[in-house]
Image (tube, rainbow, N blue to C red; front, side, top):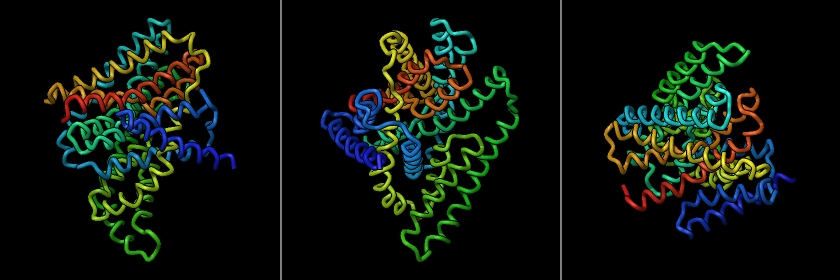
Length: 379
């Protein structure tokens, strides 16, 4: 019964906060992110983290990336592959190097400083995707490059993390197996997306059941997400790939039009709020300088590194700045890595809250940053 009340509070508050943000000239997603902090444990305490909240949140982010895949032009994605790789590499090297140096400056031992750099190298574009969508630029070349870079970033950071953990962890990690699983996943995704998904959609869509098409769409989304997690890739990458696969069929519009109202009415709002639920202001003032310094390093290093990656592959400065800004958000990916660090002892409890607040700040700053850049110089 308590969950029903919390869900009521989440849906009502996110809609009101989103409307207020729009009235103030900001993307609605900014209001939804901030209200998560307000109604969460950090301030009002109306909504507490729970297994059900986490489950609804996970479904929400999967659907968000699924819709991004539905609206992605695979030819454009392929045409921008070199830029995506360069953006991802630049967006990893700069945060990794500057994150490591920052860790050393604040007194971390070398292995902990490297882990901090890896954590800051992560990217989660789910918030950027929603912002691009609200701004009507989700099909732009800049947005497509950001989405492609996020795919590459996820692979490189996961592999780098596995390599690093193999050196510092007492558990043995088979690096060859880690890489093989990634290769198998993408081979399966390409094969299934090219041949299997269109065939399955055509065969099962005529079933005489309620909403057959969107039911099959959800099954494909969850199947790809499960497969991604099984092979050690983020579930959101699987959801994105499922969206791309279905976008190649004649059922794309029906899936999108019928599933979006369900997702944005219930699951996506829970995802936005769940990010704010991680915030705690306990010991905030004693760590304020570290938080400010880390936040500046996190935002500027990713923005600069990803932006330069775009610039060297042919984008003009204006587009490069937008692409860099689109990669700034760390979101749920960095939160997961932070939890791994805490559990393994590579991120001390002393700095855990500070890092979580920094991750939230990178996520909250992304929507107004993109809005300001597009408003100043529409692409």
